[in-house]
Image (cartoon, rainbow, N blue to C red):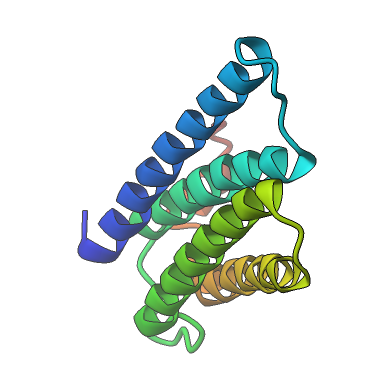
Length: 151
């Protein structure tokens, strides 16, 4: 497993841990302390787990397992992949922090940062899969399928 893959996978695990701790806080807040929580906290929790953890794990595993890029593949660019990693990490972190903050304060600035961080998440996913597109291809399996082999 090479370095960039480890970045995606380890960051995914960190986001998962922070996400489940956030869920624990929400559960205690609602069911034990009877305080409840806002929609912002639900969104922060959900995006941290689904985008930060699940999506980054998918991206890391795809980077690790998909066939190497063809020499003619002009789209695949390791620098673009690492840029997508940083954009995703920063976007997800900002979204989480500012949505948690929005649970406690009302501020237009906070709302703008949440929207910008959402845009960063979308950009990161698009950049990543743009660069990976050529790596989504058959490597030998198309020959076995042509002979009638079922998978």
